[in-house]
Length: 324
Ligand SMILES: [Zn+2]
Image (cartoon, rainbow, N blue to C red; front, side, top):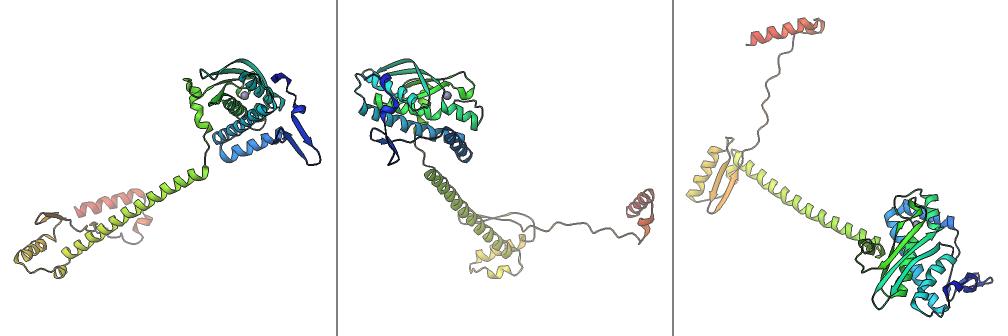
């Protein structure tokens, strides 16, 4: 079988009574392209462009991978290259994009996979431009995903495609390059993350768990600080209260000698080092309220209110001279 012989209507089985459409054993659907564009817009507004780009890339990957498996069922392909060529043909028949293959070097024995193709009439570029607007990056996400999934299924090893040119970013047509994932091309290697399934719930769960751990650690630190502040406050009260010494219990002469020394220095602002055996305690003075100068005596009632500014200044200077 030649890929060019594939005809859409011959591939599909329509059951009017059941309301189903099948490609071999797979149930297929017809969608309105504008509805897909509106779905894309709503997804981007909800999830953000980069996340939707990855989701739609993987959606396209699933479509391409399944098309490859189905085309192997329906066609008697003489070679791997022709089985692979059925993918671009199906992509065109399904109304997604017109594909013009520029080069295709596929060799399972050596692991070489190198494909370049032009894409024309990409429905995805049209819809992105209509509903999202001009882009500074390629926008044919489901299409590159389809090509990656299809080629991976045929080649038996991971293959990724990227678009050096895309109508969505203002180029005259889309151009795509596909290579094996283990190639040295950094652009291809960088694509691997786009194909990993994201679990948003698990991601949020990890973030919340980390925040919970941080909150617990912070609460423990705050409890320690509160306990230390309470101990410090009690110690200050005991040292600076003239009767506080009565709460200290001790019978040795050395203890009472230390107590007398502490009582002597307690009224001062000095920081005292108290050494008991190998332990050292710094006794800090109790903070004292700031000393404010007494407010000046109020002027005689009605004097300043009626006096002009020059007279008021003179009055202030006279008062300072008398005070000096
Ligand atoms: Zn494109």
